[in-house]
Image (cartoon, rainbow, N blue to C red; front, side, top):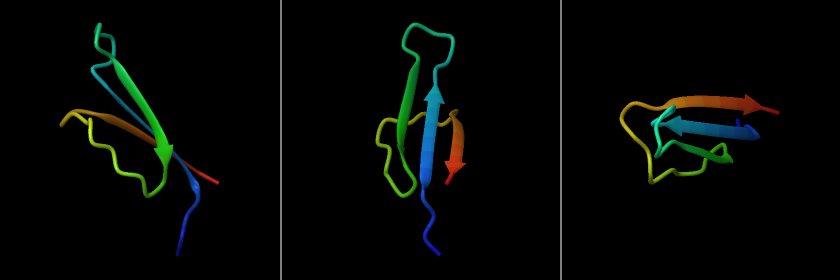
Length: 43
């Protein structure tokens, strides 16, 4: 079953090098920390 939607990945939140990445379900994120926040919005 294929799902459509958006993924937001955030890490180093509240720091100078904060990163928030956006992609689609199924995308690969190379720059990710072991401690990340992931939010998935399914259409």
